[in-house]
Image (cartoon, rainbow, N blue to C red; front, side, top):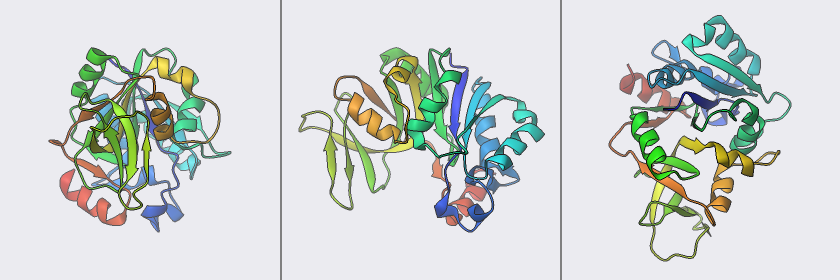
Length: 239
């Protein structure tokens, strides 16, 4: 069982303006609860009590919310990126010292709301033992990950620009959209370097010689609450 997670809450939230002109995206409110609170409670509902939350944009507001609410019942450590936002890959590496004791851990974006049954992904990951298992759905997206028939990551494509990056030489693959939720094995931390970069780039590089798997959860609700209209939709879907 997994007891540790990281929530990415450092982003600038430029798509959620004007709210993010004065607040971090993670504190946008859906039916009386911030996105951060909802995801902390989501993780707690699966027995995950130890969490790392990275901060940058209006960092002090998130830190204050965590302290004021006693972490909403979770043990929360702040990974402070106030000096420079490090993106997902650099942010995970920067927080690695707080994750090293966990054999496996969950990582998720603060602006994702979902009904995904997290135990299903965790059980899949523990059974197949890849370096990482990426939650995916079959939905419209300009950026898609490519997977072999065995559900192993083999590439990436942009459906607008037609750009494609292949990690493996394969002609047979299917596309899926990444949900911003990962289950990661501790061993992956050994491949991260300090700096500012995306986890997707890390996965594409590692996929050349290691297994990075997909877990499809198209049967559950997934909402990227990155735009004002998504916030309105969330009010209905997540009462």
